[in-house]
Length: 193
Image 1 (cartoon, rainbow, N blue to C red):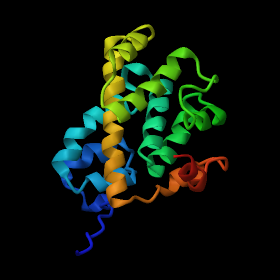
Image 2: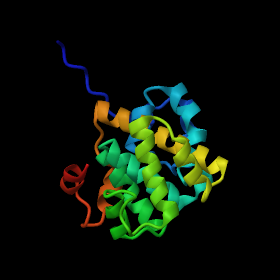
Image 3: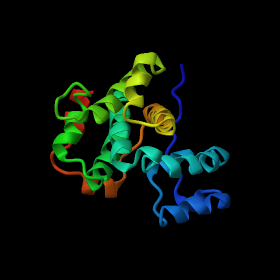
Image 4: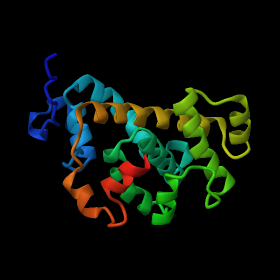
């Protein structure tokens, strides 16, 4: 069986001109994952508005969105996504201890009921590919229908990214690596996922 050729992120100067809006949105520094997706111009352009809605958690808000993203990254065993969102989570008010506790899951007493449910819902979506009626009822005590839809879609978007990253591998962006706190390493992540 022949080995599949590695697909590396395209440098910005090789992107189709129609993607300039994305370069502009990222202030001239798109991430490696965007460079990977730039191999499919139409896909990246279609995906971008959804990314813009969800990257800050959509109707869930930034803090809760980061909890969901981190749990998906853990379950997808995607160091790239996990490391990329540690800094974002810290900026949204999560502590290093809370970020590490995302690895434990919703049963940890650190979480309030609403945030514990987000972690449990991600696990249900990954394991069962749906939210049971009981989980939906529990979520409805804390979240609106639009927020639950954003939870499902946020999970799905990061599953897609995790699959791409896991398929072709992706080096962590240098500026992300440089900002990563010492408390977070790829070895620790790999042993917990």
